[in-house]
Amino acid sequence: MTDTAKTDATTDTPMVESAGVHKYFGRLEVLKGIDLQVMPGEVMCVVGPSGSGKSTFLRCINHLEKLTAGKLWVDGELVGYRQKGDKLYELRDREVAAKRREIGMVFQRFNLFPHMNASENIMEAPIQVRGESRSLARERAMTLLERVGLAEKAKAYPRELSGGQQQRVAIARALAMEPKLMLFDEPTSALDPELVGEVLAVMRKLAQEGMTMIVVTHEMGFAREVGDSFVFMDDGVVVEHGHPREVLANPQHERTKSFLGKVLS
Ligand code: ADP
Ligand code: MG
Image (cartoon, rainbow, N blue to C red; front, side, top):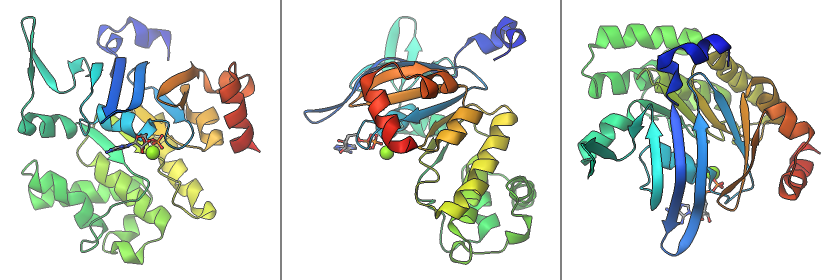
């Protein structure tokens, strides 16, 4: 981040702040005290072995899982609670849903609505959730399809699109709600290798436009070139957190070295 960004008072509030976040599923402790900050405009790449808690952490940020202990703020607001004086009140489902809409999420499996074409997929939430007019929603969908390089596919159904194209529509769909934060959970892991690049290119552009992003990925080239910060998670803890080029070139912990050795070879 630039120094000028730091002097602007509004950007002093982290977009995401996690303090001692713990999550249990029954007796299984999946997150064992996560402390992290993501500043506005930052791209944080999160890497780690399967089962280390990466998806669970994203789901906690997105109000899809309740924390067992610790605190999590998104844009200065406590996730799951409303503060009144010094008392905390648990949010109602409706309030939780409203908060979730401020955050865009893109999954490994694109989860497009199969019976809707690309532009209808993108128009759905703005119309249903925000009560937007069809014409405005359609206009925005077209702009977004252009942004992800798919203007000519507006009428195509998911089954008529490649995996890479479907994932780009899924990104456009998330952007249609004008999120302040985007979470990506292994967005290219289900793609054939030759389709990975087109999705990463869209994500790179989004990053350059200033979107705050947390990206769970094993694409180390992307992490190195686009990431502002790099987190290595293992077994529910943040093992290492630093600048991507520094961590990738010079990992400090044995577990990081061993994992990176496997994915980079
Ligand atoms: P990652 O995304 O790093 O692969 P996950 O966050 O998906 O890891 O999972 C971390 C651990 O939590 C795994 O052991 C997984 O089996 C467990 N887990 C995830 N979701 C649930 C759930 N809803 N109920 C029980 N266990 C879960
Ligand atoms: Mg996962």
